[in-house]
Each structure stands twice: as C-alpha cells, then as structure tokens.
Image (tube, rainbow over all chains, first blue to last red; front, side, top):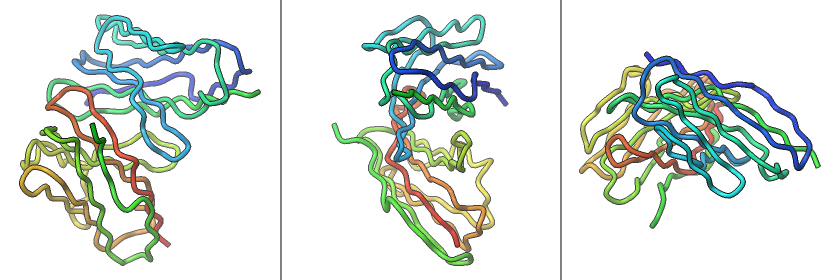
Length: 108
Length: 112
C-alpha cells in the first residue's frame, strides 16, 4: 500500500518563528489533507489540497502531486499552534492513510 | 452544520470486558470510517463503510472487533473481549464518498 512519511518528527521553535512541515508519499493520490490534532485528541481539518496552493491566515499549504510531496507552512508561530500535525492521503476510493505526524512545540 | 458526533468521550474497562462506541456522521455523508490511534502513532483504519456496506476491513481484528452501520447512517464499533493493547483513541470520520473527511472528537479507551 501507499507509504506516507512526515518530517521532521519533532520541531521546537520560539514564538514568532516560521516553520515548514513536509509530507512525502510513495504513489499518486487524489486526496491529501492536513490536520492539527488538539490536546484533547480531535483532528481539526486544516487543508484539503490534492494539488496546488492554499492559504488560510498564517497557514498555507502546497502540494506538488507530480513529485509526490506536500508542504505545510506556519508563519509567525503562536503557542496555540503547538500540537501534532498529520498528513493523510487517499488513492481513489481507498482508505485515508496517515503519516506518523510532526510534533510541533512553540515556546513563549 | 453539525459535525461528527461520538460517544462516550472516555471509557475505562477491565481486560476481557466488552465495550461499544457510537458514531453519528455528518448528514448526507455516505462514507464512514473508524480509526484506531495508539499513543504516539498516526491513526490506523479499522473499517470503512460506503452507505451500509463494508469497503475495507482488512485491518480489523475480527476475532474481537465488530462494527455495523445500520440503515447507512450511524454506526457502532464493539470490542469483545478487550485486551490491554486495545487502549487507544477510537476516531470516527465521515465524508462524501472520496472527498474531504471530517473527524469526531474521539473516544479514549483505557483497558486495565
């Protein structure tokens, strides 16, 4: 099955810094989503981005489907951005496959 | 628009006991998923329904786990008997076929 790798596994930054999270996948996909898992465990939808670039406030994402990767950018990080970020991909009508996540810690 | 509803939020049981989780998807969403997330790992699919038919249950431990989606709407996931290694967060999600998936708040299960 398709493999999803996220990097880095852990990232520690100071408030105000910018960060880039990467998601690599092993085969073509028709669905890619970025999630933020809050401290209570809920997965919050950030982006649905099978290809192209989207922006939402301080967050933006780019997926280059032909090269099988996606990037999540967080600018001017805040402590509330801390948590685990997951990338998940799908091929056709198959299951949504998750990476292992990037744990982001933003220190004040 | 109401999101995906799950209950209970937390459950503590002893090993060998049984437990059931309930999920109500977003109205009109044909696809419903149950995921298991063990601490420190990414979510892993247990079962995927399309309406009330099973699309993928290849990673469901069928000797102890069962799931049903009656009438193609809400769903229940059952574990019987529970083992210590079943301690995890159980996440339900729904989507319009193969499009964007939305997750519920999850049920945190502790087996002691």
